[in-house]
Length: 124
Image (cartoon, rainbow, N blue to C red):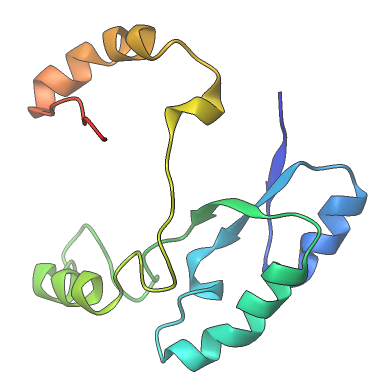
């Protein structure tokens, strides 16, 4: 089993010394809302850090409510359009990292996929 910790980029060194295997960063650290140049210091710090991020959190800014009376679908669509997930390069996602039998996972989530009409994603 591997252990990670949610931290901002400037705390990666601390969790590396504490023995963590990876870090999880807030998406805003590498994809700020203003412009790409604002991300350069964080990207450089991450490149030089002893641990690499394997996940990101807080993918939607707090100023953009997803539910409730102030939810704004048009604003969310604009945010997704203007902030593509591959803006700073492609991320590779794989079930290989979880060390599970993929067929067993498909079976475990079959009711969920059926309820929401989701197909099993096939990637080449």
